[in-house]
Amino acid sequence: MSSDRLPDVWQLYILRTASGVLYTGITNDVARRLRQHQAGKGAKALRGKGPLALMFHCDAGDRSSASKLEYQVKQLKRQDKVRLVASQPESLSDWLANQND
Image (cartoon, rainbow, N blue to C red; front, side, top):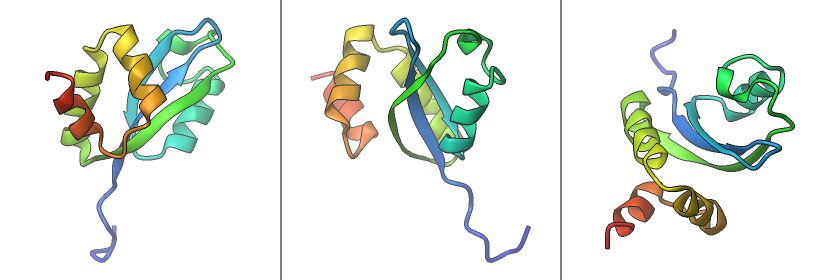
């Protein structure tokens, strides 16, 4: 790895299965990860659940920050995840912070 390379930016993403289930994950390459899910590789929870639709994605910082955001989103009730997808916030952290108000 060259020293002038920027560190990987991780992203959080939400997919919708054919039956409407919302799946949350993190990756440093959303397009690649979606292709993997579509091909039945990766998360067992998504195998055979296609077609899959990418509903939301956003930058989530480094791996640690992305994991923390993923945990927070996975704790949301379905109705809150639907609102998140509908609002497409620029800052997921700010959106999550405002959910406690």
